[in-house]
Image: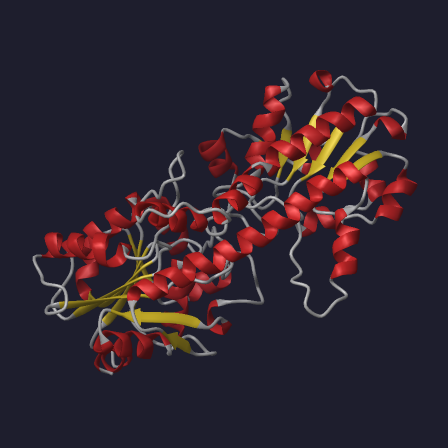
Length: 440
């Protein structure tokens, strides 16, 4: 393949547009293979961190960042030097749950202004089927003055990186690849095969690749919604959901899903991209959108459960001191995007409660900017009435119940409330602790 050969021989350069949890690891992976890689992001402060050897995403670590040969830049004209460009910018949703394509549109404009003849542009951002061809190509053509298919090629390869996961990484996750035509597909597949150790999986067209991404996350969302619905019913039946799931998982065909808060940049967002396009075509989702409704309601449900438990323990919730452990959307990851912990906070605010929040993984600056939350240190947790463990970071999992109890006020154990959202502690140990507890 021409691009692959030219990249290996340094006749061409590869560029990553968007250096977040997805783009940065990809850039580093290609650089490890000896390619000349340009890492571009409009966030100047982020670029400064990368240049100084700091990895704010914690995906590859400071040591790897400090040694990588990636040329980090916030100067878009640097992209003129690249002939193979990968776009990996976030794709959030608006308040009304419609797709917010602003980052993708902006990235396309930047790439278009700096696109050179003969280049290939590959999108990795999660978008609805048809978006690459209907939205991105016209923007690239308008800003470059070049004709797609004749003077540049386009492709789509959905990102599958799982932030914070040190087992399932870029190199050992099968990569879906697609192109606007057979030539583009072969070129794109050949380049990705350089870094994907388990190989790539080509599909017939771009729309199919786009659909694969939104469907695989919608599937997870629906399954977790089922477990969340079970959890709400079992709570009324005084049955522990996790014990039910543990028993169910002894059967070979159990899927292993558990209830919880469903946020982040993929599972909590991708289903809306799918239903948005489906509704444009006249189909109104029955299952997917209802799964989203269930999962979006869990923060409020957990907060209400905490209030109920505080009242049962003899507390006056409005006067209670509440601490939430965890703000990120998942454990052992600094990503706070679309975290549903904020829904717990907002619902507690409705009762006049302003909880303290502790998260050793989250950025204090981002927490303030994104949610107006001022993070506290675990050492500051004292004289608490109610503790909500919302995220199962390792730092929280290793806190034994004896340590947890030291955070509470000096009152009888039955007046202390622990909300164990992720089921960190065993039921036997919770009962023996003497404290009032609830878990999802």
